[in-house]
Each structure stands twice: as C-alpha cells, then as structure tokens.
Length: 372
Image 1 (cartoon, rainbow, N blue to C red):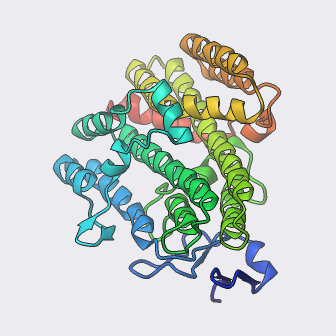
Image 2: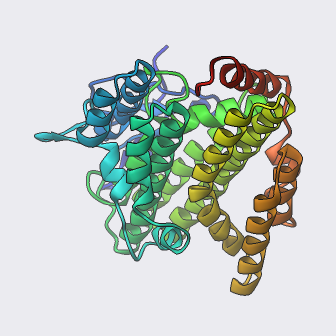
Image 3: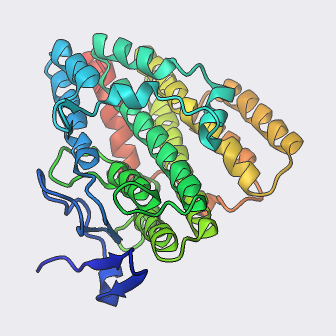
C-alpha cells in the first residue's frame, strides 16, 4: 500500500490533508534512495522540498561504521572528511562540515560554545577513527547530526519571522532538512538514525508504548506542526513551540543513553573489567558534550532563572563527577530534572533488554579486550 501523502500548496496557502489516518501510524525510513524527497510521507512527516542529500547522509554513517568495523580507518576518515553518498552539486555533504559548523548567534550554538570547545567534535572524531573506537565514532556522528539539525530549526524560526516561507529555500526547507537528519532512510544499517536510537532506548528503558518510542512518534509530528505553522500560516510561535518540544524529546533520548551507559559500566565494575569501565566513562563524557547545553536550554525553557539554572547545572556536574554506578548517574539525572516535565516515568529504568545489552558490552570488553 502506497504511503498516504499530505500536499501543501504554499503559494495559495492551501492546506489539503488527504487522509487523517496518515498520522495514525509510523512509516519510518520510507524515503527511497536516490529520488527527490518532495511529497514523501515518513513517520508522520511529509517533505515539501527535495532534501534527499540530507537523507542520504544516513548511508555515510553506515559506510563509516562499516569501514571502522573492518579496520579500514583510512576509508572511514575519507568518508568523514569528503563524503560519499550525499551529493550537493559537484561535491558531497560531509559529517565534518556538520562537526565544524559554528553558527554563533543562534540559541543552541551559543549554549554549545558556553559549555564546550567547539573544535572537540572534529578532533575527537578523527582520533576515534584512528583508534578504531567504533562506539565513540558512532556517538560523535550522532552528536553532529543533532547539532546541525538544531541549526536548521533555529533557521526555520528566523526565516518564518522574515516571512521567508518558500518551500525550496525558506523555513519549510529548513524544517525538511532537520527532519531528514532525524528520520534518514530505513534502507540502512541498524541504529543509523536518531529515530532508531529513540526506538532502541525505549525498548531498553521500558518506555515504549505499543512497541513505539514516544519520542519517535512525537518528533515527526511536532515537525509537521511546525511545517504547517510556517508554510500555511507564517506562524513563528508555532515553529518555536515545536522546536522546544523536539529539543525536549531529544534530551530525553540522550539522558536515556547516558543512563544505559552507566548501567553497562556498573556491569563491568562487578567483574572488575577496568578497561571496559574506563571506556564507558569516556563515552559518557562524549555524550555530555551535547547533554550539558541541552539540559541548560531545557531548564530555561521550563521557566527557571539564570541563577537557578546555573545552580542546577553545577550540582549536576558535581553529582556526575562522584557517580560511580548506574544508581549514581540516575540520581544525578533525576536531581537536575526535578520538578520539570521530564519525569522518571518518561526516562524509564533498565529492562531485561538493557541487561542483555550490558552483558554484551561486558563480554566483549572482558573476553576480547576491544570495544564493540
């Protein structure tokens, strides 16, 4: 059965929702490879412009992962630096351009710069590829994608405010690009998209509803609300509201990943697997490059004052520095989000699937001495 489609006529500000049931179920990664994405329905979102090159970056991710797995670090670095699958004119999009992008003056990029050395992503990725550290490479690539998607959301807010709602160059196009980075294509490797990460986390933290991660359902629908608000009504508030909601869902997923890594680290500590435990600490450190500014922005979105926000972030840093186990990290996370809309129910707790995943990490490190 062909996917249902939503058609937007921006010039006439005509919105035609062909079927209501188009939004009742997911259709993740339905975008075919090598085609124009315009009009494609995917998991509750409909592209109204051609962002196929952004979708195809999923394949660059998979090819980099495959090369690192095979020990071909030279090929992995080449794809990272120069691209392979995402053509844009005579050149290719690359993860490196997302890594080094620094859109000073945009809300999230200013938060990133407040907490981080902005050169860390590029330098860290090169080092991780050189060391064949696959988990670190995967984390860095996912962070770049979130980081650059947030630039597109910021640009969508800005362009809507300027009445620039042209589908091929204005705010709707920015939103298409951001959602393309989230959804990617299903014709790819496991865990290649943020959508897939949310789905896996929900299974391991017990937050899935009817087999679906709430965030994986919510992000495309918030994106669609922003697209309609921008393209049909030139509504900056609608775009900004959706952007806040997407940031919150993404933060939930990153906090879940943080907690799952702490769970795996604890499993390794039980068997005195020092190398594995140390590496999990490094991966948690990489995650915090993105989590800390995301947490800061979330607390501000919740209406906290600058002083209250900084107090909580300082306490979070102190708690994480002392956290030696899953319980310690869980406590640190729950303290920093106390009395906010991110509850323990939304974050969940490790399930049997998480235990099996932690044991797999443990077995890999402790029997083979290498990263998964």
